[in-house]
Picture (cartoon, rainbow, N blue to C red):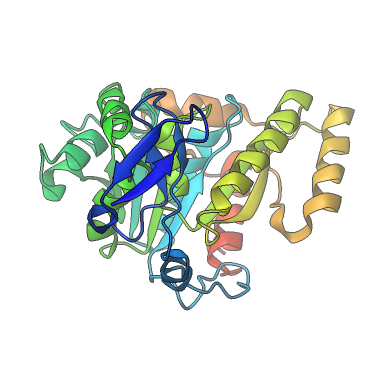
Length: 319
């Protein structure tokens, strides 16, 4: 037994360290219910060796020490920046390129299903709670594209995570790891804000793609989210910001160009070619279609194809 003191309320906890899985790095206080880093004497070396060494990746590649399935999280705490639009069209574009893709929706709004014209009977909640087996929770929505739907039921997963004294941050990952081997890519869409589901995503994915609309409030939210990512990287250094995707690029707005210049100077090759403002992108969901189906020749479709080429590292795709 060891004694751990909550840094928030100073409550003492007596814990049998043998019952704590080696990959668990966070605990929840019984008193104040806040999470804090779980530091167990004698386990520092064990945790350090459990974290895979991450080589400097080239564009579109996965470090050799990581699983073959690429795990990409599409996230930003600011809403209205095109996260779900990007998640759906990224996943659909990868599928069109011949990759096997699982799209995971961790947003309680469940908009990914709507955008793809799908009405699944279950999804991520049922997979995590084991109410449905993977074969029923995961539905195929296009050729090479499968969906784990989100929706209001994810509130139950939040409660499940909150009830765990430790290991809550691994809940979604523990459900996804056994099935990810069937896919080349797992693309995870997150909700706005910062909640237990977003933390779970950051403890699962290896690569982060941050959509940033070219406006002042989005840039401010981007900066705040980077601080949150840095806090997670203290416990999971293998999660990496790989792509910054400027969205809603409007050539008529001078300030947008200034924001784009700032991102490119500050983050270099991490900045992707921007997604231009395109009304077809907002119209496509009403028909349950991706941008490639609804308006394949539109600027929105062209820009997302460019994104796919960058992420895969295959410059000749779709040509």
